[in-house]
Image 1: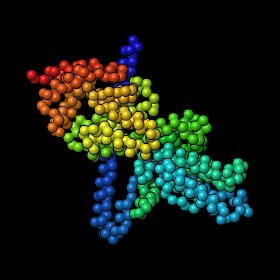
Image 2: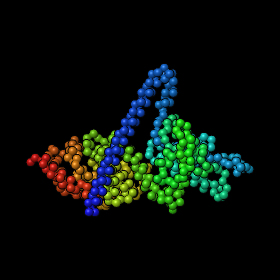
Image 3: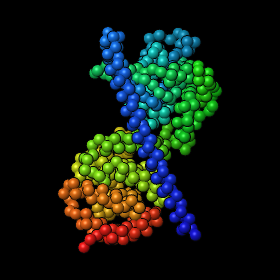
Length: 468
């Protein structure tokens, strides 16, 4: 009875994973269509402006409009820092300004470490934004981590200068997430100036925050609440939009911080963050595959990569893998065929080269990258996995052998090989397939329960197609 229940659970997970995959693919197509429509609209708008009398007179203004970008999700941070006058009486004004410069310099360095774009410093207000100029899904978390680092730095800075009790600097931080328009200027050094309701709202959130606090809007809160402990602060009236709920960030949740103190992120945080960040990496790699894969790759295409990424997660769940193992599996699945953009033969190796170059930029450790590359190399035929993770990707890579769409998928692989003069007739191919499937065996219990029965049926189906 337990075996039956386990099989039903695995099948249910498989159905849910497939539905999720289909939805993600539909969303990606809609996003691509939307981006194309926006670009087409901008082209038409620019052309119209150039043709109009006003546009011909104001060429400089048209060029300025062409140098702007729309970001659907950016996180804007305003940090106001100024000296409390009653505590700076008697101090040399130049010394106070030197301290401010030192603090703002460190803020610049913090922003760089978290890959946040500094927009500008307006008087004693520091402004920056995440998700600009490179769009990403993690920018709300990145910006809140930046805010925490700024606050922690200032506390440590003043403690070293004056001890624990005396503070002369006041810091207020406000954060809000939403769409922005960025005006681009400069050639040698590109600068971004952002505008829109999101910027105005972030500024207002900062204005009503308390000294020493990091205040975030409900939009940012919903995107970061998995990682941070937050207290509800109150409502901010927003013109034409009603009240905006606000929250104070206390710190990281204990389970995500070193020693549970809520300040320094631990390994558990890094892995959870990596699972979210994977979406950004996936978008880059799938876009690379769409643009750079040769036309004759009818089987080793974007769909196959998405199938493998989905399947390694499904089998990984069934085999009881940890979050980190799931991250390693999904990353290896994503990169396992990207080497086809370099060469067909030995593409697994070229995939590891691309992974080694790209993954350090996303904070994968050397040890994780080595494991990912080993998992990728294990997909070379014939499969000879040495551990559970390699077994999972080998089963995922050949998942189609036990699927109902085996024959049409198999035919795409035949067309791919034939286009490179690596295969003869379809009849010869079917004979090879029967031999291969007859000698193949899934390595994991989950894959065997999902696909092994169907795989035996495939042999009979292909044999019926073979002519002597």
